[in-house]
Amino acid sequence: MFFDPMYILLVLLPGLVLSGWASLRVKAAFNKYSRMRTSTGLTGAQAAQMMLDRAGIHDVRVVATSGMLSDHYNPTNKTLNLSQDVYSSPSVAAVGVACHEAGHALQHAADYKPMWLRSALVPTANIGSSLGYIVMLGGLIFNAAGIVLLGAVLFSAVLLFQLVTLPVEFDATARAKRLAVEFGIIRPQERQGMDKVLDAAALTYVAAAVSTLLTLVYFLMRAGLLGGRSD
Image (tube, rainbow, N blue to C red; front, side, top):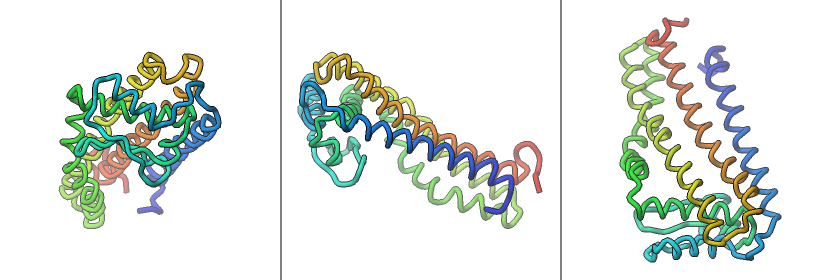
């Protein structure tokens, strides 16, 4: 399959280009604004804590975690996990990332419906991710369109999860941008750097959803279920 020109042109190359471009944008923006110190001198951890405090959220812990840009909010145990490069850094990039993750905690506290839906979809998406691709591939190998369709249904759970993730991430970013200035965490003139870091990060989620969609389209087309069979 990896030598199929259709797979290379429709899935492999676009996926590599999109993910590579998004990853480079994130790294470039983060590296650039990691060298720019916030005028308030707040670290990522302090910025996140201020976001939580000003929003009246007192049951979320801000903790340091290992890994580069491994930052995430865990709604299960209400921990806001910040990588070391973000947790202890007073840079515009670090504060932007920390405020974004705090934005997820604000969503949780406000019972933001897309976030609830994304959490509910995690088990189904995990099943679709682990089995969907294998079932679709098996269907192609055995020339069984019905099996490909079954795999596509399973794999669609991954796409649905990614599509629901987009408004969750965009909303957290919008909250971070607005409240970071409103709460005095950064100055208005520093918003540009924060925006570039968070906007670049958002592109990675778009790239992932597009890559998943292209994979689905490829398998459906090869099985003759979309646009006629391509042999």
